[in-house]
Figure (cartoon, rainbow, N blue to C red):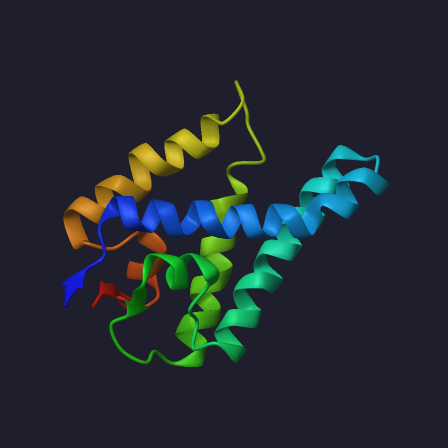
Amino acid sequence: MRQVSSIEKLINSVINVAVVSIAFLPFFLIVNNSLIKKLIFISLFLLYKLIFVFFNKNRTFGMMITKTYWKKKYKIKQQVIHAVLYTASFSTLLFWIFFPFDLFLVNILLIQLPSMKLTGMTLHEYLCGGMQGIKR
């Protein structure tokens, strides 16, 4: 049993974003307003995470495909907070200030990766009481 690497966490997230993107396609085609589209996408992502919190021991498709697990059974409160913070982290893909993906790059390069180096966890995992992923 070992701690999940940064690359494995990235792969998990890419898979999760891909799954939610597929669910978002009908809204992309129907809704015209850009901000509304982004808010729907973010809402779907949070709903996706919460479904797994309550119905699959908080193991998303990304975790299932990469065969990663949570180190222990965490309280529902921790898992819900993690879902909200994970969604907030994901949402940096959709908004920018100076150029596309600037907030995402700041999030990944200045927040998540340093947090991984210091604690072995992403910031949202750390803030939720040290929710750690493992590979069996």
